[in-house]
Image: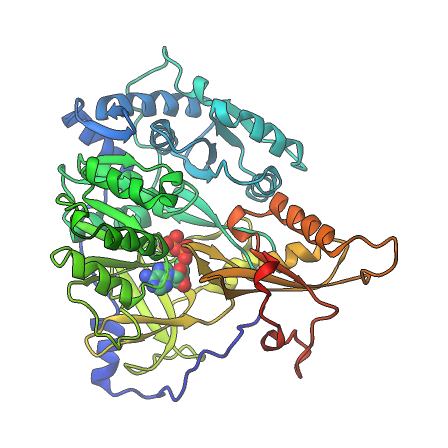
Length: 561
Ligand code: ADP
């Protein structure tokens, strides 16, 4: 689909003064850093395990695994997977809870040479089936708790079915516990993560070892992570954010503390756990940060000191300046780290440390500066650099750009483009869809999206995917999905018109149709993509361009949801 609004660019110069060109294309746009890249992530973790086998690696509530135990489990898994044909560039899906065994399974896949595809157990079977089909993944590892879900999903898969390996079998004792030699190459698949796709089919971004290693090592250097750090593993395994949360601490001998997703809905308990577990790195989406701020303000002087916390790190969506002011009022010596980046370029690509409360009239806080070995370009529609201060679309290049979307050459070609500014042959960059601009100090600011994609509570959503799904329902004639303010927060609202008017004695009630449509969406989409409100209208007005006139849609009544 075409961009919703032309990103407001404006008067970019064909010929920039040489000095400005140098700043835009060299000084601000990149941070080349040379560091050894010859050992893949799983080998670095294995070496750490050999040095400190007794140290705690991962904790989930009262249960934990030492580095030695984690590494043995991963080795067993690797040998089992190798025996089943896994090798470099072969994908293995993992459908399992986010518990101690999850990182062991991931490391097992990596040691076998393969790349992993996390499947979120909270997805409906229909959705899992589509991902299994689209990815053509040959092997699925499943935990005992998710076997029934997998059965249900497999029953809906058309075409060849993957081989299933129960995790009991994956980690069975009696197998080899010595590590296999490194089997992947730099360019081998590390993971595939699916994100919402506007055409109605999710797309799987393929990230490679080199990019992820660069990301993890850059984050470790920037944040000076060491063995005393404690990472709160807050992200669901199907988010790319979970990858570094699990693996970066293990590279440096630190501890991973798994935070169950449910905890996020309970700010008092969440904070108590951060304090009790001595978390030093806490990555939260700004909407969760808002809940935490409310609780901390309520506690007043009784709020926890969070002595251990070094990096409160909001990422994944716009960070409102007011959140920063509120945080720094309570914790003036704990700067916030704003992290920005798309799944298509290995998670975070930009970082900005917020030490001082932003001014009352500040509209935004910067997303900041590029991570090591990444390249930023703010370009106009002709793909020419725009001057400092002028908004343009952000294109991201360097080490970490995904290979593309799995089995989807068309969508890959649309956003992974040849990078004309790089001297390396074959260099590509990712067209992010984010409109950004440079501040005077070279920090980037996120301005807006160039398309309809939204972030809600940290979840990346293409409303077009919800619309396409609705359109597959036989009752639907037109459908538009928007984000609106509802009852104090932002929510998804679906506006639909129906093929047949709800008239006559035989017609179902409006409430029945709403329930039917909602059920239809729930069966096919992740829970966060099911609109909070559904508005049935006689017709959706078209504008002069023949498109649905979004501005003409009424605000939903408060009692609609
Ligand atoms: P992640 O790598 O965090 O999983 P996603 O692929 O889910 O990222 O979403 C990336 C998009 O989210 C970006 O293109 C941008 O639109 C938005 N985004 C992420 N972080 C920020 C941020 N700190 N400020 C503003 N927008 C952000």
